[in-house]
Length: 206
Image (cartoon, rainbow, N blue to C red; front, side, top):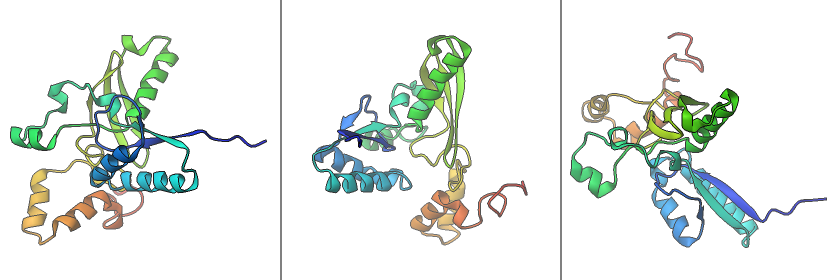
């Protein structure tokens, strides 16, 4: 006997401080589309899946659960960038953090394994895959994370550069003759160019 799905949940990477899941209506769809360029490896495929399912099952409710929610209450000392205040206020620039659904689960699971609620623990959780991040979790709350305004910041990942000196980015743009688009493509997809740090699919040369 087949099981009829009544709802569909979506993990969304969009930079958002929404603290609860959001029903994907026309307004939410437009908001997600506007944020697509901040996570080009994630958000466009998520939107494509939403639209594909909508065409197949137009009456099925779809709900977005945000990867940034777990980090929404990070203290200002962790979430604030040392950039001009006008940037932060005009463009809502801050460290959003990502992989929150994974880190929230990992911190709960750590409490289960230790036989103590996570509200009593200080933890560092790791999300390790094609994307990777670390989070400091204090008493059940995210208090710092390696990812920032976009999911490019932080650890070196399968295709993403991770954190690099901003001066390096400015130099290759201004002195190396690379366009902003070429720099962006290289940092999001390092593996396509020099294949990361080791020159191959592994980092054995490091």
